[in-house]
Length: 313
Image (cartoon, helix red, strand yellow):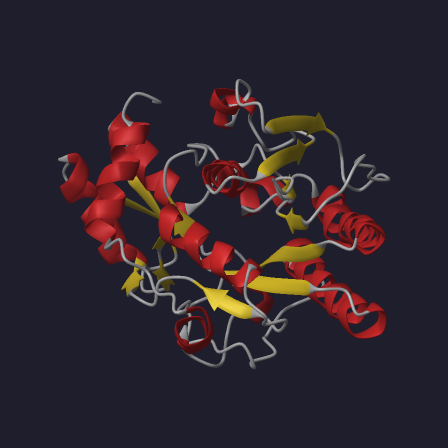
């Protein structure tokens, strides 16, 4: 019998990384999760420690990365991913996107592994093209407060494509739009856990600006399916994975209050600098190349997420 394919998932104890660990184990892979636990949480993967095909490496990928034995795939998901985190640790955020990506690309090259990087809709900045297509180059402020994250991801895409073109390395780039679901941190500062936490505590919901800015929310299971298909595809250019169903933040607050059974009570706060006004993916490429589109509607996804968070407050 052929040996099981072996996959390294960096950021493996994080929100998305832990769900990827679940998926690859379910698909019959041998899985190594690597995480320095700055924003990841072992609780997200503790159910996997009993699995014979699962290993955990406590390591910062900004430092030299060594994994003994063969590797077939590397999925690079190590990075703070919410403003509350990357504004606290901007230099580590830049390092994991630059040095970390460089280290992992070198590992992939030495192992002849295919590498997929987690990029983001933030590469589009505050977009002047709507919905956002992969060919759009973005409107990003490199010296603004969000620059540490946005530019780390843009550099990550550039060095990944350079390794693909110069070294012939097999690479994949996923641009991830707003995603939600179980294992998000209530305190991570993103709008969904913030709203749910505030509603569950009986606090007013904080809206930054007037609430007219839009987001598009994709349930985590749908996102993982898109990433899995992209990894196994033959397409090397970036692909948007997200849910094109767009909603204003004010409407989203109303949905959260209805779900949790609390009265709508909003506290308006100043809009952060460079906060994107619109966010919706054009998923034509994902549909055509991967045969992928989201299946879980927002009402169902929010219900599942609410069930997870109910006993976390």
